[in-house]
Image (cartoon, rainbow, N blue to C red):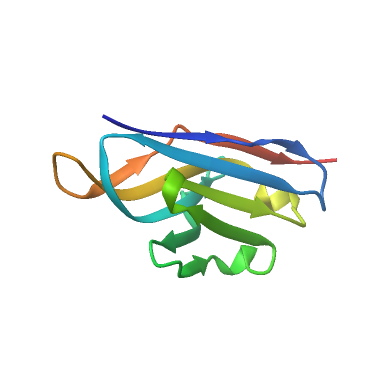
Length: 120
């Protein structure tokens, strides 16, 4: 059994910062990549940022220069530092991990989501 548990969402004023965390636990053999997605009401889920086991990162154009993704491989945890937040960043943020369980094939796992609301 594999679980992804997110934390760190909340309400913040425009220009503020938040840090999201996502910890993967359970019968994990390896994690090749972790990522953050977001979904605003009435919109499709979109990739925000991703990081592979070697440390290479990728960002959506809308968050480049404001968000930073990082990873603690020893803790199977991924972080998203969000600075200079804008109202358009308001969404449910979901953690994703492409991982291989101890018994089974590689596949994607998802967290339950954490709400980020940017409003004055």
